[in-house]
Image (cartoon, rainbow, N blue to C red; front, top):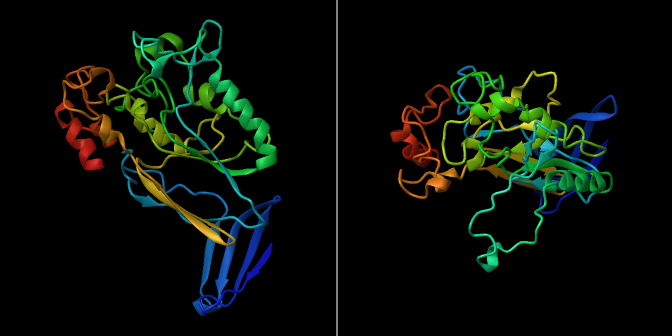
Length: 308
C-alpha cells in the first residue's frame, strides 16, 4: 500500500506510507516524512497492549499511552460503540437474558413507563444488528463504554490472580451458576463477518466494580487484556482504568482518552446505598489492596477521588 500526500505552507512536503503485509493483513505501517530528515516512524495497524503488569496490580498502567495505530485506504471509516451490554445467563435454560430491574418506580412516572413484557433478548438483538451492519460498514474497532457484566461485574473478588478469571473461587453467584462470563456473555455473543478479530477498547463502569460495592473482580476485567485462556480471542483491550490512544487516518487523526468516571458513584457511606460503590453493601473487611484498589472501605471514596 503506497499513499502520497502533499501539503501546503511547507508543513510536510511529502508523506510516503508503506504497508507491510502478513497473510493478507497489514501488520505495520512505516511513515516517512521529508521534514523528518530520514527518521522513520513505525505505526501499527492494531492496538498493542503494554507489557503484562509484573506487580499484579490492575492499576500499574494507569495513564499509559498506547502505541499509535494507523489506517490507510479510502474512507469513510467506521467504529462501533457499545455499552451496558452484558446480560445474565440462566443456568437452567442456558439463555442469556437482560437483567431486569423492575421496581416501584415503573409506570409510576412518565420516565419509567414501559410496555409488558420487557425485552429479555436485547443483548442478542444488538449483537445480531452488529453482525448485519458490519459487512457493509466494516468497522475498524469497537469502543466499549463499560458496565460489561451485570449485576456486579465479574463474579469473583479483587483479591486473586488478575490474569485468571474466578481465581479466588468465585462469588456465591458463580459458585451456584458456574457461568464463565468472558466466554459465554462476551466471546460467544459477539462474532461474525466484520466482527471477528476486531479489538474492543474499553473502560469499566460502576457495575464492573460491583455496582453497590467495590471489591468484585474488576481487576480481572483489566487482566483479561493479557488472557492466555483457550477461549479468549485476543480482542479485549482494557489495559488500565484510564489510558489514551491516537488513531491516524489518511487525512485526520483521533485522540481517544479513556477515563474512569466512577468517582461519581463513590459516595459517602450512607448515601444512596443501591447505587454507591462505597456504601453499606460492602463487607466491613472489604479490600482490593492486592490489585491496587481501595485498601479498605474507609479508603474507598478517597481512592476514587485520587483516581479521578
